[in-house]
Each structure stands twice: as structure tokens, then as C-alpha cells.
Length: 327
Ligand code: 5GP
Ligand code: MN
Image (cartoon, rainbow, N blue to C red; front, side):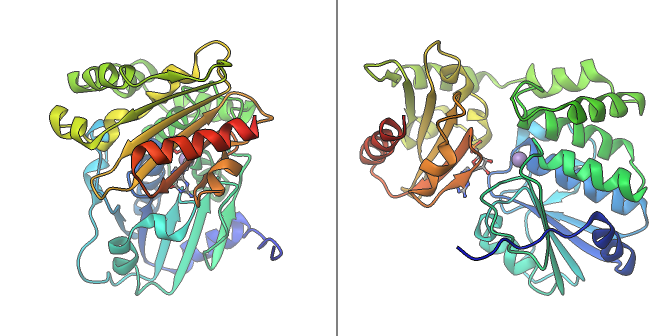
């Protein structure tokens, strides 16, 4: 193991922001609330400070986050590299998870900033701010904006709240701290409409998501000792129900919540034949990030993922064997 790369200070990031005019802000493929929310949060703060900012994501804006003011600024990467001085990767545990087209679009930037909360992040930026104690990248963005005295426009306020809310299971996971609630309180004082934003985040699903739930329940398996629950999604089901990647967001929490279950796992056949694995642990002594890393994945100790070779039955058997081993 090489020595850990020291983090940049917020003041060093502030210097980069002050000394440059043009920025491209990026996040991981199949973006979730924390990825998109962090992009909008930092992006609109820098724009309000007079900077030129582009927000790009390999897969564009998921439909379930289109209610966020400012989300229309999220673009898929242009074919030609952008003329920007600084590239900023947010919430992205490894550089390849930004996506090939995003990396090409950002290739002319002179400086790469890497801001993230994944413990497995290898600090691939020129400057890195990795805070694995932060429950969401959105909370790091809030700390940066407030510490530097950057503007916090309404777009940033709402996006940061959704970033942190979605990555903490609505402020419930053990990673949630007093600072997280203090941040939420401050955002509410700054005018955030709690009822409306939570309703748009959690009570406005397309019907096909419930049909997906029915299909997943038909594949549900519980290990004989009751400690491991898993289900799977075949690509044929995606086609049949006309699913979008974000439709399965958060559904794993249903099987994670089963009494006695310590690890929940979700297996999804992707269009390219690869298998996406999503894992959640309810037990601090079972680190699903370590299990994911055995297969080239990563994440956090209680929430991690993998992309691995199929077929889906084999992937499920291999990963579940590693989970049983870890338990
Ligand atoms: P989710 O299960 O919600 O897709 O991901 C849970 C966590 O694991 C997230 O923090 C995510 O960044 C990480 N993760 C998910 N899939 C992968 C993967 O294929 N590789 C790595 N390195 N991390 C992943
Ligand atoms: Mn995150």
C-alpha cells in the first residue's frame, strides 16, 4: 500500500476557485441524488460568484431529479474537449466511474479537483478532498461554500439538501451527524421548503417503479440463517417494463429492512451483459465495501457496489458466497 495522499485544505480549493474562470463539474455514471445535487450545489455557487461553469454527466440527468431547480444545466458530455481551466470530480470513487466521454470532454483542463466521501477513493486528483466521515458529498460541498463565503443561491440550497437527504436515507443512516442536521437547519433558515422538496423527492414515483418492485419480489431469496436477502433484475424485465436506471434507486432498503437480515444484495443484468451489484449492510462488523473490493468494486462500509462479469446466476452465487464468508 502506498502512503495516503494528504487532503487539500478548503483554503487551497478557494485559491483554485479565485484564480480561475472556467470550470467543468462532473459526477459518476448512473448518477444519484448526491452526484447531481453536489454538481448543482457547487456549480450554482460558482456561477453566482461570476464563474463560467459547465455541468456534465456521462448519462445526463435522471428523470427523478428533473424537479431540482437548475437541473436543466446538467448536460451529457460534448464530443469535443471543453475549453476549461479546472475540472472537478464530485462523489466519484474511481476516475473511470466518471465515464469515457466525460473524461474526454474534460481532458483540456489543467487541474483536476477530486471531492468525495468514499473511503475507497484513491485520491486520483491533482488536489483531493476526501472526507469519508461525511455522509454525502453534498455535505462537503456545503462546508466548502460556507467556509469560503461563496454565494448560496436557491438552486444550490435545494440541491445540497436533496444530495444529503438521499445519501442518508432521509437523515437516518448512522453516518448522519449533528453537523448534518445543523446543515439542514441552516438550509431551512435560508428558505428551503421542506414539505415540498421531500414530497418531490420521495412521493412522486412513476407506476413502473411499483411494477419493478413486483418483479423483484418474485426473485427474492433469504439465506437459510435469515441473514442475507437478495433479489435480481433481468435485462428482459427492464425492456418489458421500459425501466430507467433510476427506477431501482432505494428499493434495496425494502429487503435491508427485513428483521434479522444483516446484508442485502441486489443483482442487475446490464444491457452490455455485465452485472451491477448493489449491497447494503446493517451490521458494522460486516463491511460490504471490503466484499465489493474483492470483485473490483468499492463504496462505503455499509453501502457498496460492483460491476462484474455475468451470467447473473454465477455472479449472484459468487458474491453471496463471499457475503456468507464475511458474516
Ligand atoms: P449503489 O448501491 O447505491 O449503486 O452504490 C452504493 C455505493 O457503492 C455508492 O457509494 C457507490 O459509489 C458505490 N459503488 C456502486 N457501484 C460501484 C462500482 O461498480 N464500483 C465502485 N468502486 N463503487 C461502486
Ligand atoms: Mn455519495
